Image (tube, rainbow, N blue to C red; front, top):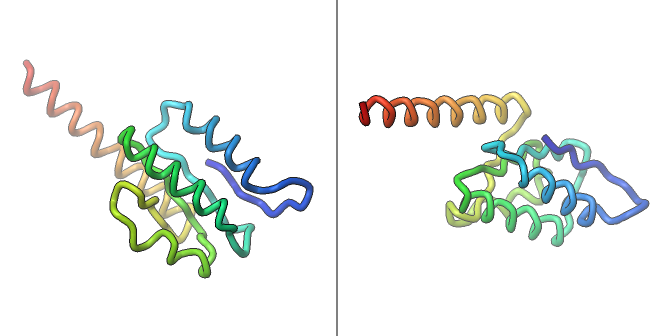
Amino acid sequence: MLILSPDTSSPNEVKLARALHRASRSDKGAILIDLSLVDSLSEDVIDLLLAYAFMLHAQDRRLILCHVPQPAQHHFLFLDAASQPLLVPSLLDAMQEIDFTFSQDQSVQTGNANASL
């Protein structure tokens, strides 16, 4: 989970790019970003989030954004499925989505294991 916070000492894009790069190297099925501390997203941040959403989708993983500022939500809503991050209203919703996805993956793996026996 990453929490984006407003900071005037250095651009958010640079810190976010570094954090996303580190998080994407993990074997986790999803990267969760909490945007509750920011009021707006720059075009560079939006582009970076969309690029990581696309990359993670290609790896069968998810980018989950919660508390997306209202003015930025339209940037994420009307995209093709491969480019669209999952938008959720709260951290609880994000955790439920991660649990649901994990449960689905486990049942598929168990089904495949049983089919091969």
